[in-house]
Image (spheres, rainbow, N blue to C red):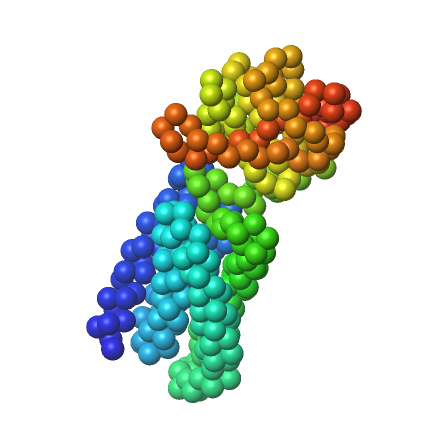
Length: 309
């Protein structure tokens, strides 16, 4: 047991140390950057302390609980990257079941409960006063660290439920904490909402949202469309410059922007149409189709428009 726990603890410490470096110095941050940073620090602290105090049995149990729910996560991500929707949906269902059972029920109502109420009393006492300061101190550290992990599990379970709602409504799966190109849905939505609250301040060319639009690009003939398809943020680009809208604000297009596009009726303030097409290589892509020009003029975009030149 000691050898197995030592090997498992070493692998965890090594992987979390590498992840901490990536979380800190990578160019684009995850949507749950702070939560992952706290999780890695807390896990490393628990691993080192449990090894120091020879709590290998409960430490091994906690590690295996986390490994149990990590397996369907990795499998579901693999299916999602391969764009296999049905296996991804099945894997996502397994994630939720394993997560609730292992990390919410067993970890919360058995592990943490046992650490608080069922742990045997320590024989270590203060030499001078005979108090139980030493026992209470190290026990409190374990309780606080385990509680932090449990709260983080609750946060990620909330993200799973939101992903489940998206899966039911659109039969699409998106990792809300780590989606493609290193950006994150939650982070962009928060930035978009904050911009609307602060009177839609101008974005710099190097801002996070601007970089997101540059990364999410697809080609429509000789035109380029870059957009973030979220509930709070949509954008459009043309050669030489582009404009984006935040919140419910409509996108404004200049002369010549909608030439060669299929005209479709849409009310001002409503979201744009999404077209699926095949490019010259036969690959399927999606693009947002702009509304008709007469509807654009009704959108009142002068106030709610954010322009990036």
